[in-house]
Length: 307
Image 1 (cartoon, rainbow, N blue to C red):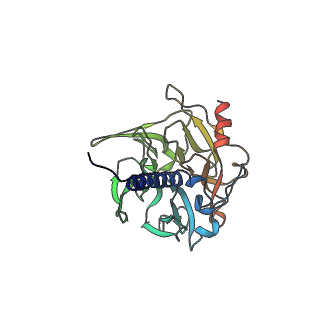
Image 2 (image 1 turned 135 degrees about the horizontal axis):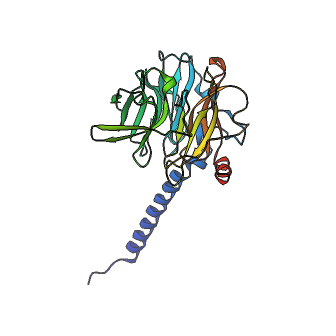
Image 3 (image 1 turned 90 degrees about the horizontal axis):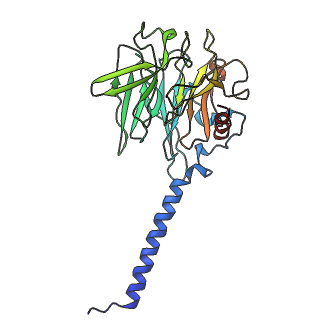
């Protein structure tokens, strides 16, 4: 029978314990990044009152605009920029990444596309195109592939968003009128099976006779945050609706006076992957257009109790 040296056994045990501690430490660091001082670009989180998000960090020659997106681990941030409102010329998407020590400077990853939206597993990045179409980039070892056309339908696709179930949500005119007639756009679901796509309006009480297209859908489809009470010049408020067991939707409710104070454009709504904060674009015009963020998880629980 082979004899094993006692010092060798001790060394093996020490090595095993060291590896387990290392794995545990890395796992906890990954899990707890959202709780660290570096999360959310190192910005001080807001309370119940919305405040501008990372204004100096994101400032450039244009304006920030539309939806933002964080990776599931919180270490990548994407956002849209533009030169002017209602003008696709000069739009694009920038990325900021955390390297373990600090956040990088913003860099342009695509131009002439907007509304960055990550797939549920983070392997794809969707963008809105100038023809109310959808473009897609694939994650690679070196970043992101060049965008390719993902969907171009006879109907418009605005604010395209995936969900866990595989159903997509979008603002669309579906089969009524022109793709460029945004007054006919409704909140819709889109399913893809092979080469077939089926689009359906979510109907009442979410949709109105006017434009309905700015929204955020929870990944599990339990709630939707919409831009509601749209004026003729698109000022609006943020409201929420919950999906019922029969897959119909509750009548939308306001997110409250702190979020909806004053007449302003509010769109690009997005909830961080940890569920804690709501982000959105707000402005009365180009000069005061900024990303805002506000504590959302506690507000959500309060709204759910009032269903």
